[in-house]
Image (tube, rainbow, N blue to C red; front, side, top):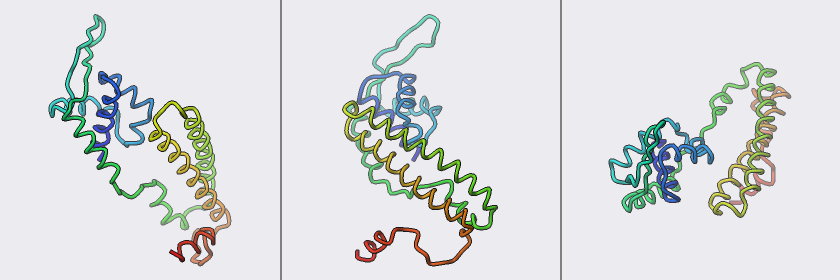
Length: 200
């Protein structure tokens, strides 16, 4: 799946303009595409090479410099545009469940040192509050500049971070109350939300 993400990113960037691999890597870092696609920038050159071999992209010029290696500029081909659309649709349809590094730990969190867990949660809450602010700032700075599809991505990141913040605060409260190992029925979600789920 990561290989498909880097291919989609390369082809998407080449749809915007012709670029050489180093420029592609810079655009990826600027837009955090490696983080969003969960791939490593280091695999970029291999992916470019494979896309060229499969005729999804083609070289249009070579930039030569005395003191630096030559840079080959690529463009997307018609075959590459078709492949890009195929990858795009596949990623939009992808229903892989979300992964969170804390999920497996929460299964056993009631058996751990609650003070240590509470301290870690406080740190995560602080980091997440910071991310909420950053995501909103990034969104605010890009309104009217990037396509609305990208704004939806930014809003999604902001709203996911806000939801995570709420979840972490609720978890911290229960940790500090020493309730992680309880087997009580007391609701964690708002009663109004639970009633909506029952009505469906």
